[in-house]
Image (cartoon, rainbow, N blue to C red; front, side, top):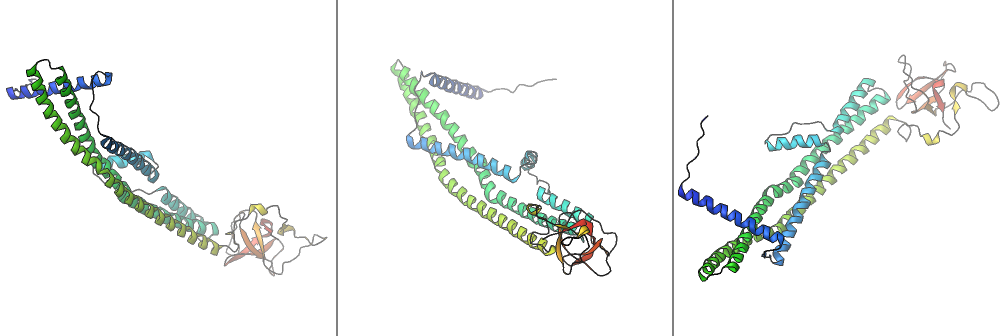
Length: 356
């Protein structure tokens, strides 16, 4: 295999030599400064403050961006996948978030149990509410990405890179300036001193020009902070709207579940009252005898065990739910009439316990 070496002209060789000499001079000056053997041009206090403010702004902007992304998407693998899509300038695939997945699972389970049953109907309602919560979360994430994270990213990818580039250039100009000053101090002949002073004037001019460019960029950080403050307000507004939607959604769900249960506790048994005395319906007692006493009016009863209705005349039961029961003509003492909301049917007396 044949390799061709590009031909270097005389101007190219001169430029290469000049660049190598400059790099060597800068490296030498930097090393002597670190060892304390050379003087270093110090920036004025105002310029130092501008640099400190920029460094602080850049540091906290990076942390705010990172933590916000982690809050919006806790899965690091998904965040990395989105980052790759962003770098490839492609749209990430649409995903179902965890809340929506929970809603889909609840709806599927509710339909399997039967939406006409108390448990199945409650699962479907809860699943639909979870789907609404998931959609509200998706809207909040998109709003935050656009109104809060995007300005932070624009600052880090745009202004920060420009400022970093100009600061590096300024540092190179400072090293050239200090090297020229050292060269003037080391000059032993008048001719050498004149040449060194001429170089010093050029490097001083270059340094002053570059410092002014960098100063203007650093002063612009104040307007960046003002812009980020507005973005922060938009983030808070989006978060407020998101939680308001979630609150309203859960209040509506509570109201829907209450309409399905007669008791104010959504039909769930309060275990703090489990020590209260109850009368087993299968063994209803009088004051001093074991005779069966019919109930003249409906009373609340707690379901002790799950029960699946065997036909349309019976009522399916779920353990710990609260229903209304009463006796009915023609029923044996082993059965009672139960009612849950507008649904009625026979229930086995041994599966329930009357509440005081």
